[in-house]
Length: 340
Image (tube, rainbow, N blue to C red; front, side, top):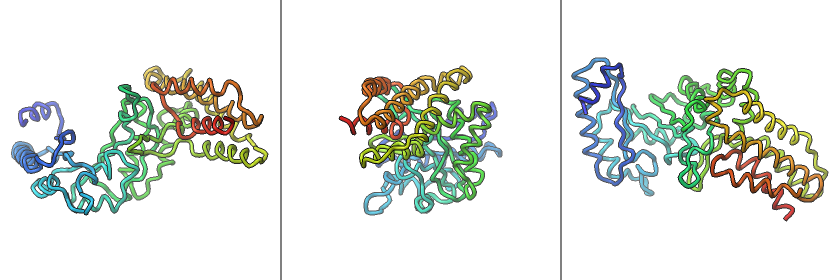
């Protein structure tokens, strides 16, 4: 291993990481810690400009480190007690993907590992949002949020399978890392998109706002998709159910924004970025068209004939592209359910 790291050092690399996260079982903590300690000692003796090793342990979430009674599990106990305290250990939160890390949670794990606990944050990574074997079907384009408002020694943001579009979220992560005390997710997100997309920023903001939240049956993370849209849309459904007059001016404006932004981005995005999101933009257009029919259904007090067909078309394409499933798509489903 030292020979391998030497070869990388010779091309200019000064940071090295050894990850044990894909291993299983309660055993191995002692051997893994001893291996890292031996490697760290060898690097320290040979080089004066190499930074401490970085590692992810086999038990890297709180749920895997600590049992239901609050006791540290055997692997983590062995690994943490033996490991050189200069080695940086990365932590992902309660689960490998989770809806934030509280300061209390971070400090609890820091007591186990010491000053060099860092964070491995699984946003905007999107490989777990999949349809059968097809991965990366939803983009995580929101800001980094819900992390401790304290200075963290090390933090890594796991990118999507779409590297260029990952830069939106990762840019906000850089702002967080620089100043967690004053970090504002929305301000940072707006700044990142404006800097990266220039004149296309307004269209990208609309599109990205509908593709932020990542959720499966077992994990969720990221800001809600298009909360303003869903509030207006759901309120329109509720008002219809109560027999109230439904004002749809703002909702129609938001739907027009969706379609217009998709058209602008499909026409003007550079090809390398478009390759990462074309399927999602096409799906976004379908959803906007269906949302417009959903609004018309509420106005007419009956289901527009084409709405169910268009909803099926959206469903047929969800194996390749997902967006706004709990916001703009949810509105379509609510309207269909209302009139069936």
